[in-house]
Image 1: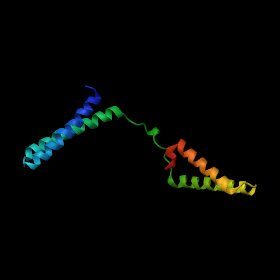
Image 2: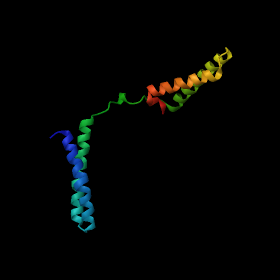
Image 3: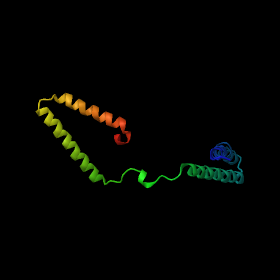
Image 4: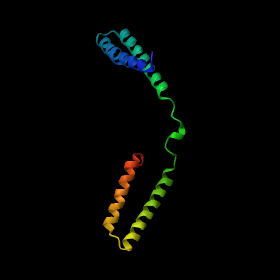
Length: 121
């Protein structure tokens, strides 16, 4: 039996047998049957979790986001922002239209976020 089949059967047992069985048994005051359906449901959920874990595998730690200190990252962002503002002021002082320069910066930011959506948060 394939992993996909195990997952579908487990989900079917959980949704079609376990939950309705617990509800109907509880309504009819059959505590033993409700507990039995609950245990069957637990088995299906454990099989579903195990099958998913086998298929998904382990994500290596180096694949995650880089660990940085929030204060250092914020200071870096503040410094880069100050440098950008100084560059804009230099261009305006040299005769460039401030509105056009700021519009260009906005477009560059939107383009950067479109190419790397993980940085837009």
